[in-house]
Image 1 (cartoon, one colour):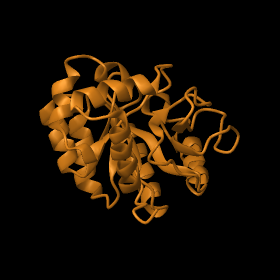
Image 2 (cartoon, rainbow, N blue to C red; image 1 turned 60 degrees about the vertical axis):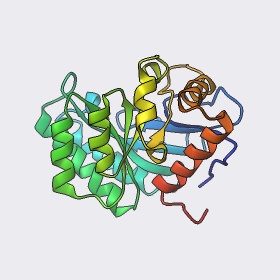
Image 3 (cartoon, rainbow, N blue to C red; image 1 turned 180 degrees about the vertical axis):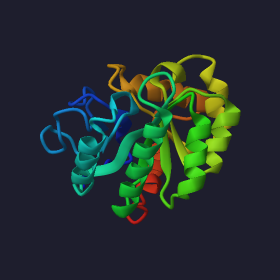
Image 4 (cartoon, helix red, strand yellow; image 1 turned 30 degrees about the vertical axis):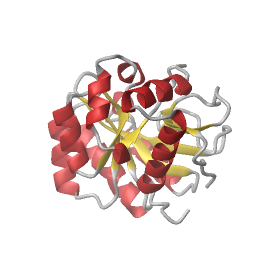
Length: 229
């Protein structure tokens, strides 16, 4: 697969099909209920999975077949976003079934998992305990507190922050409390400029933007097990 360099901005999770910022490596998320498939649009890397909002009993099997098909594509670098949402979507039991099936697929193809989780952290922790994944998970859109962040990191998870949350002043204390080797940044298809997010976080950490780029680049290599790159 094509890879970013230490000089690039890495947008670890977006739904935008074309990067709007030069020098940005964008990981585009495609969802199984959509018509778009990896290879049909211009991007160096994709993730692919079943979003719990769009999961139903009727479409479960069809969407899971799409995940199986996409997982073998070398440009699909992770499975997801997949997970749990108590505010929107089908029963938690169906969400659990689909999530665990996707984690199994990810393991078969030696790919990590991108997590969507809204007010369902206990379900996520129980799934983690049952599945005992050997590959890391990345919780995207994180906007929780320090205690929750610490629990996730203790379970070998990485965090990518909700774009609107991380640029708020109150997020500064959280980002400073976390180990640098567990963080990613994202736009989530919001139209926000990833450079502004990097600028805010680098100021919070009292480092240069270039140093933050190098930190997140190393995290990218670690998360995707590319240490020899």
